[in-house]
Image 1 (cartoon, rainbow, N blue to C red):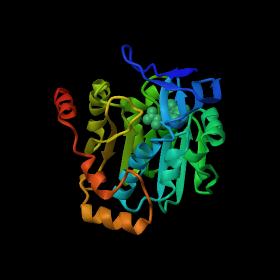
Image 2: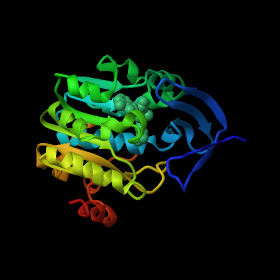
Image 3: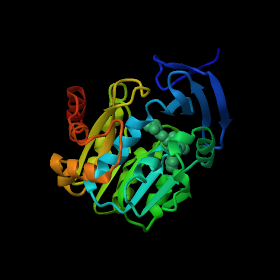
Image 4: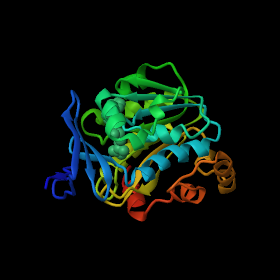
Length: 283
Ligand code: SAM
């Protein structure tokens, strides 16, 4: 029996049994695998790192989509960077947005996810509101003249093509692409094992947003406990939005979820002490 061994850390790894291999290919940019595991359902990996699994993707995609969208309350134009598996797109399109621009660097990820991870995108790639752009997200935000209410950076980890999406120049360019009242949310790893990612993002992000911070959620296959999402906005009030307002927006939306709810939304900005201590170390 073959096993996928995740190689994200030097001295620790996790293995998933490969019950059926659907796809394995070295694209021009990344090593892409999609396989089935009895416990996790279909699993996608890029460059030896777990990207998403059918069993727990709802936590990650619901929290990265619904927290900024319900905090904003009237987003019309959304930018997703990365997100090739289509799960983020599926959740964003549950909101009454006018247009979603998705900028994905690797067409093969989209093509293979449509075919071998159909439950992630669940048809959202056919939604007429989608404008799919095959490009580097950094190039897009640097050169685009468009403005968005929400920008979601659903990238790989800061290794390989994803690295540039964790730079200060990316955050500056993304800030320029946000409309007044806009919100940036970006996947930012698992601080228990990657505290430097938390600290580095804080140093690079916080000077450019009036309201910067992190919120968290536990994604079981992202080994190490809570993962965090970076938050940047020009209006501090959208982060501390009245739970009653969130409740009204959530109820009115008719959106059904498995992880997100207004109480979890508000609570997710309360960070464990070890993360606060790591941030305190940043001068
Ligand atoms: N949920 C995953 C996680 O938290 O690690 C990420 C999901 S998604 C598979 C990551 C996507 O980012 C991939 O489709 C990858 O091709 C894309 N990506 C990586 N670097 C990129 C870049 N510079 N511009 C646009 N897309 C990028």
